[in-house]
Length: 96
Length: 351
Image 1 (cartoon, each protein chain N blue to C red):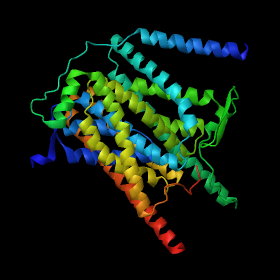
Image 2: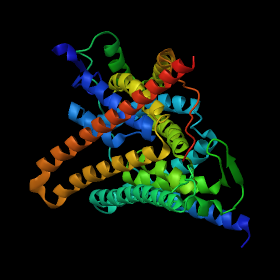
Image 3: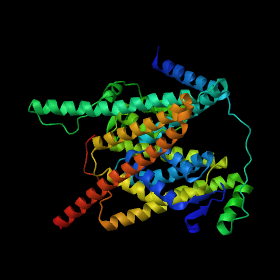
Image 4: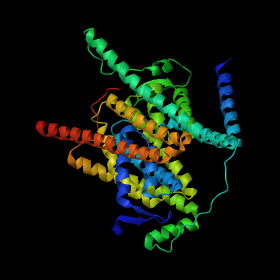
């Protein structure tokens, strides 16, 4: 069998398997959860209210904040390690 | 002592924040060193600190994405990340994971799959542990043979070399991965990532625990590149998972940020430690972590057959996981500090 046909057959099989699996669908009724912002103040209260008002904006902000905080912490740690005198640009060990 | 507790705005529970930092440091060190997310360690830890299980999973994934980003940045600077390999593997991982996750939902409708999945996980962990230690034993035997024959010991020699057989499969397109220094059919990493992604989806885990050894033994990556490339994958899948869980309202960002403070330090220590520990040292430590994970899963399974033992098994599993995290973090940190001290001393003596 030519290679192209063989690849097409493999891809069709994978696609059909995926379709069969996806046809099963997800389970359960969605649960509505509400954050109690009465005991909170300032930014914490704003954050809880954002959660209650829009999960979409809440998600978007979370997804932007996580990498941003990661990069900031990473750069700060870079600075500290460079200050200590650790070489952060090369690695001498070359074995498996 | 009220200042030691923070009220989580979404979950509505008061959490001991130094505990979050300690957990972040521990899992950051281990994750940065082994190239995995470490959900099997963090989720029970967050649960112990007082988070409901659904929030524990979501918060863990959110912090994992940030932590893996820090580790990937560090490994990237050492040349340990093969971005091309990571991007190609991402295709297989996502498709495989989705199929695995949907299959498990379908299986759940048929009957109870929980114990079956755990047994499958157990078999997989046993297989990975065996693979790692068989590899180490084979490498040592090769070294002994070389010494006995009066030959020089090859520093690049490896024990198990299954990847050499896979590299003989020449289905086009053939791709060269410069950081990993391998040339193989593009279908090899796609197939491996599809399989590991599918397994991760079935088992409900991130997949770093399976992907890291698969990159070494099946794709043929050097250990350090396997760690870095796997972290790159964990970072992207972590962001996807965080978006998914956050949209379902199950992420506590405040806790994730507090954990990131600790994880940022830990991830740096773990990543930099790979500079001072040889590839096989990482493999042996990884094998031990897998054995610890195996025992903790086994302890969760025992109460299914002996319900009276639930409390003792649960407590033992928790102590084991936290003890393992603490012991490994201390070992990696000590090695990193020793290596860094030697490096600084050498620089001073040269100057």
